[in-house]
Length: 353
Image (cartoon, rainbow, N blue to C red; front, top):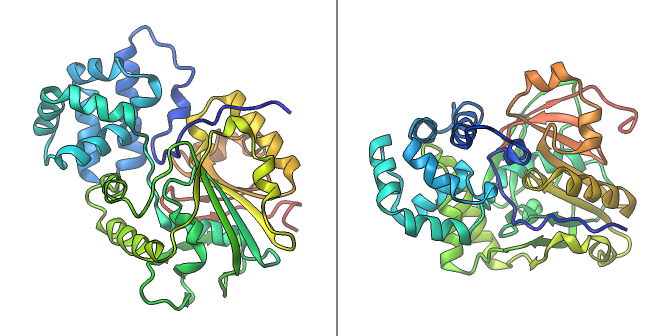
């Protein structure tokens, strides 16, 4: 079987897939457009400060020129903004931000080269639970691009889908998700998880204060609910840290699937991880996973996975620009908020009936 190069740590947020093949007579304009897309599709309505900063970067050819010297995958807004927060905190306005970046570029660029965006937003577990609640238990979880593995702790959190709270540990973050579209059963219980494993090219360790500081730096300003969820999830993880192995997916996943315990339903899942690799590598990954026998749950941009894209109409994709599509075994079942706040069910497909 062909190997494939998913050799990046999980990167959450910016839609880098749009830039893998981007060729432009003005590379600075291409980078600027990338930041404008981030402002319009991701930061708008969530983080006014990041929305303003993204527009500010897009309008500043001095900063665009600095970014152009970086590898394409290192120019993403989430990475730049996260590194600046990590090193200096987040300036309140555009002039302060661009001035800080220009004055400290050598230090910022060095940190960007070392890091990847590894946002571990546990609210994404809402879509994962919705996709697997009907599966026979017990459950084994294998996460691709797991960062610190906080989404592997799906069974330790509390959930509210608008019909009462599921989960009993009051210390756990309460993950709220509004539902719409074709009615589906709402989970009334959390499945038993008997095995969990994450892989990442550069795993983070919740026991490391520096890794925790990086996770905190990746939380956007103006979204304090995210910061509180992260703090609560980390506190739970410290009691029994999830295992996240250092692994480059060019090695494949067959041996990982084989490690899952017999008698458990294996769920292989990822959130916004494949958007950061090339189309050929995504296609190869998809072929291997579909052959693996695992239940495959993906939460990615609409055009990232070939099988998912083939089942979506262009008009539907246009209506959901900036949203993620939740799929099971290559079949799109719902649209969702990138950070797990809402899910809109699609009409059931034959795979679900």
